[in-house]
Length: 192
Image (cartoon, rainbow, N blue to C red; front, side, top):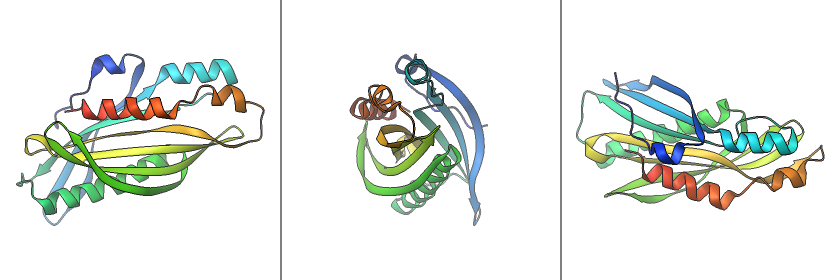
């Protein structure tokens, strides 16, 4: 059993742990990667949007994961690249599974997490909810503290692309992409 990643519980007080799963996202060439994934949803935002607009869904999420590699290998640049590449594709699939469309990885850069330089991926996507299409940003960081890999990421709405219903202003008032991004990065940096 893979140990749970550590997450900043105090920062997640208004969030709900939606799933705690263990899965094997990759197994080939004698290497097996097993992941323990915690997925949190922002219930406070969900309730606020539901009260103001009547729309009900999970609007933003945060995930944290600890990876276990069998056999245990030294963390090299090649291994970092392989894990980051597979994790990036897996995250895009996870966005698709959560109902996001037009998922596109649009950026790759570094993010400092403690003493590590994480590989950070940014995604652009769309989400359609009861006649409203939203633009969505997704982020995934992959780093290797203490010779083990961690993933941290999430997604949040950034704005309304179009709406067939008259909730534009009420919904737009609930969206604060700058704050959402800042909070997500704080959660990622506090994950161990």
